[in-house]
Length: 205
Image (cartoon, rainbow, N blue to C red; front, top):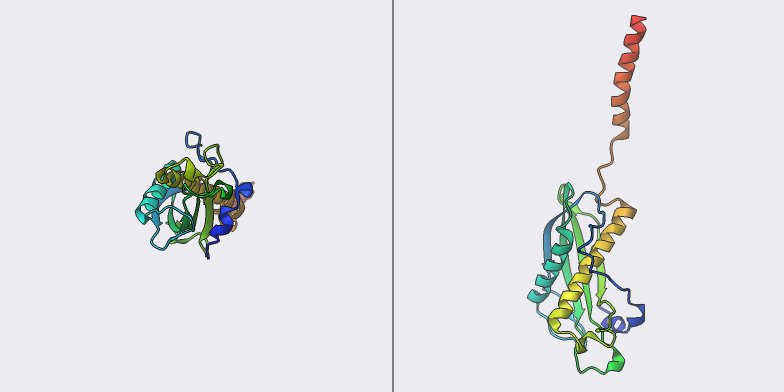
């Protein structure tokens, strides 16, 4: 189900995720305001050649990183997150450098519209998170970072990738946009006063 072995070899294809932008203005997300921040990790799978990490460690780190990024929004409508950790690999020391072990996090995301009481999509969005490429991780973060730092960095990258996904859905699918006005009703409401005014003018003439 989780192709950890393949993910560990994707160094050359890794996309750099810049999660160090919390000091900048928030990226537009329409009328988005952050509601419930729900994270679970009770069914996660530990990948091969990985350090151990507890459910509590992942839940705490992800809730913190997601809250830091999305609690900045001040829209008019509440949306809730349901995040489920599916699996992870935390690179560890002692693995041959030639393998360049990388840390990976896989999670599922559900977004709920509070006013409508339903999910924004029929199926959860699966997001694969990899550690950002840097001088400390080029040979494997297990050699240079503690488990706690790895979890924190993956969680911050996860929050950024969630934001990227939501922005894409906002642009392409209209998520978090204002309610579409009833054009026919608007036209009728505008036309009625105009017709009455025209009738009064004709009578007066």
